[in-house]
Length: 150
Image (cartoon, rainbow, N blue to C red):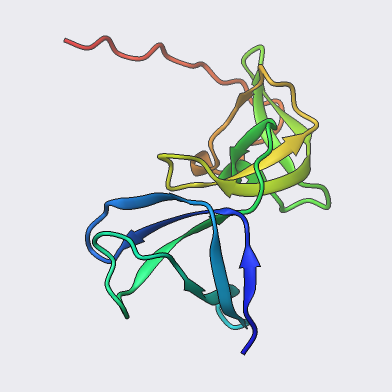
């Protein structure tokens, strides 16, 4: 058995509770395996005794190994059907493709989406959501103002 001490932050939540146990700054990684079929890593952690956590209880979570301050968009907004990854932006009412270089991926607090850092687009660009689908470059788009709340 391989045991490695890791100094990183881990955020876990117990099954079914939805409440998080945050801020565990040190834990021991007992073993790690890679499931190629599902493209995921599974690991066994040795955690300190915590209120609400019982032996053998299933938990899920994220291990925060790094943080970066980058221009990031939801991964779903990145288009990959061409040879170079790109995002669709709105410039002067027209769709413009911007080739981007992908950077680190991760989660953002409070968002279920996977986010990816990009370079090649301006920070003040209006990025078109991936849910819209592929739009022809040069297509004119009129954006309506959001409805006022009653």
